[in-house]
Length: 224
Image 1 (cartoon, one colour):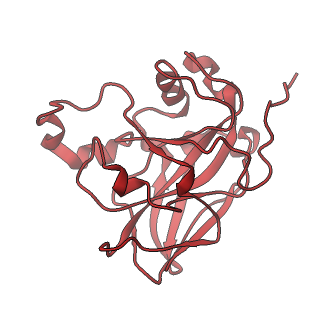
Image 2 (image 1 turned 30 degrees about the vertical axis):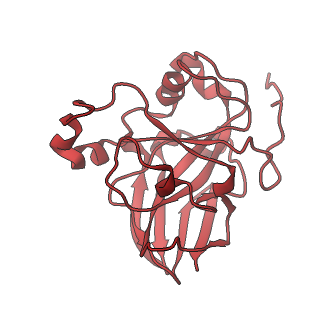
């Protein structure tokens, strides 16, 4: 029998907690592109546990919104991914139980200033106002199926620029949630991004972008 979720996630801005977490270097191709740099000081090795960054509430934008290009920046990179929406309090989960704690998934477009700090990016690169575009609805896993099998089409000004596959993640959805909740509790309404792919498309002032997945919908934004 299905247990009702303790929060409603139907109305923008989604009655979410306002906290969106993203894992760094969770995509194999992105890690491979760094090459030997991942073995240099101060870290000297690729991450052995999830390394998270936060998109706080000031970054949230609904689909169709426009954001202002930050000063002294000529482009933003568009990280198309899925947001795993937490439906039940998640702490020290086993992988076998993890998916039962999702309310579902939503499209996320994580915009950031291009930077070389691949382990600990400065907040000023990732937390600009309106830089986290969040889908208008939560798609249950009964519709989505396996979140790790999803591919996201990314267009800029109507031209296809990337097909971002969620299948190349080092930690797939259930493992990522289990590993993160080993050291922190996630609450209903939190969002855990699955991760972004390498070679993210860039958008400049005056351009529009769109991400889409059949069965989940579309997410649109513009840079002004």
